[in-house]
Image 1 (cartoon, one colour):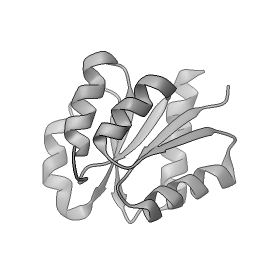
Image 2: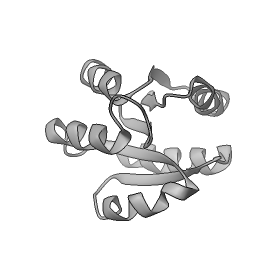
Image 3: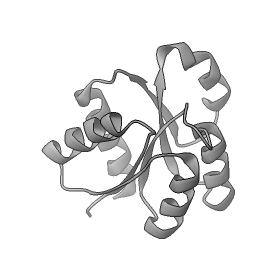
Length: 123
């Protein structure tokens, strides 16, 4: 199975880093969005297996986008990409199923380990 991955971040550089990390190590179909509004549109059309999403974005932040995605797909696997100073925000979300966190700046190996563990659940 070729995993479908959506990367959501207002930073084109961060999206590129995540994309390159994944593409170097696995065969995946990857789409990108630069804010929460675009993420919702892409999610509905693309139906990704896993979403990597920044928390702090203009127009619609990652937490709002996560809640909206969950309103129509309660089992969506979402990895919130967060800066260390945002960790207090994430405490409330840790109780949600299929929500994980990775800190910026992230380690490619840590990102791949997390991604691989979720992909194994899908097979």
